[in-house]
Image (cartoon, rainbow, N blue to C red):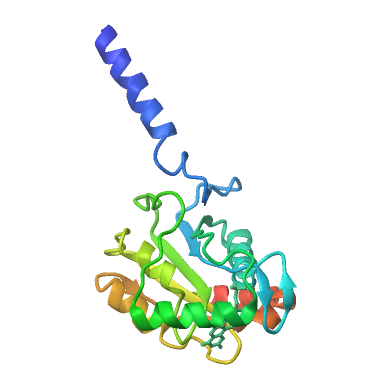
Length: 199
Ligand SMILES: Cc1cc2nc3c(=O)[nH]c(=O)nc-3n(C[C@H](O)[C@H](O)[C@H](O)COP(=O)(O)O)c2cc1C
């Protein structure tokens, strides 16, 4: 009997302290038991069209999605670009993309087993997502899940993000995708809401 009680307590503890609970970049939505999650990268700081921003454009869209859909969040974080001016960042990102570099992200990959729908969002950098997002893509399995890509950009729209997500997750059901100009996001909640209603 004692063994059984111990096992039940141990399982409950394991469930409460799963890898997401210990993950600094993971945020559970307290509103409801969420079946969707937004995985995103966003670069705050010196930005071409919206000046020096404290919150990145893509993060603002990720927050709209979480608010409207009750989705949890996982932010892909790297400190590699902290404090960089726009032009040097452009050059560094170009070299990373050309060389297919996979910069490491902070912390560990999220446990996605409880989610049916995974939103994936980031800025367009040189025609696709920033390379650090592809680093995470190698560490997660989205087989059988609905994957909804989105971007913020300054002219390229979705660029090759949707096809690159399809390549990374050939066994996922990857939807059409959504893009919004970075300089539009601060007044763009209604646009995001309208898109979410179409899903
Ligand atoms: C390194 C770098 C490369 C970029 N390349 C593109 C691009 O190829 N096409 C485009 O439309 N915008 C490009 N942009 C603009 C960003 O996609 C846009 O400002 C985005 O909203 C930034 O989102 P964030 O604040 O979430 O990082 C680039 C910006 C940076 C910093």
